[in-house]
Image 1 (tube, rainbow, N blue to C red):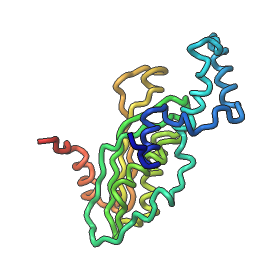
Image 2 (image 1 turned 45 degrees about the horizontal axis):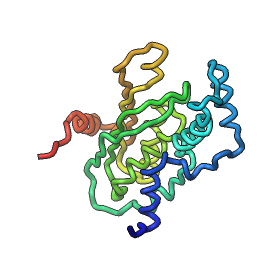
Image 3 (image 1 turned 60 degrees about the vertical axis):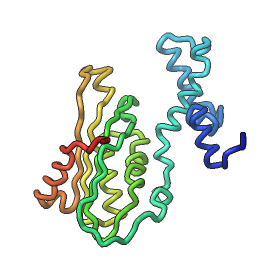
Image 4 (image 1 turned 45 degrees about the vertical axis):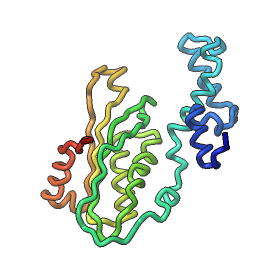
Length: 217
């Protein structure tokens, strides 16, 4: 079987291996691994038993992956994909899945983001909006700040007439611990420009979110 080109090989490796397994140095300075060992000991476990022997290194790789957003270069993310277009109606990308870590307990919260803007002569490539969500989600976060950061990024880069962002998420810190209320959904929004100043525009945005997308024929 012929070997695939390098970019396809990288994709194959991600499928074959745990993401990040071949990229993160196995030891580094060892501080994360040592800290995880101490946690395991503190909760009454034996970090040297077979099931846990590789856990400190796996946890290190996991956190490197889940917080990769700190290292994303916004300019490389956009990569020139802002285009001059004579269009001034609402652009909406909805139901973008995201996963993040609550900075209070380091437990996941996850859900979907819907992002809209009204251009003022410039639009951004479709694939960039989910990437913007991903860049900010892969950090230690609170949902309110995550929502605002996505809106501020688009406002700064596009200078549109307005931006609207809504996030809906389940927080495991409220499901697995504390109040332990499964099914609880947190909704946050950020509205800038005419999404804030015009009730009609904001209502149109919210009406779009209530519509179900068309399914396959």
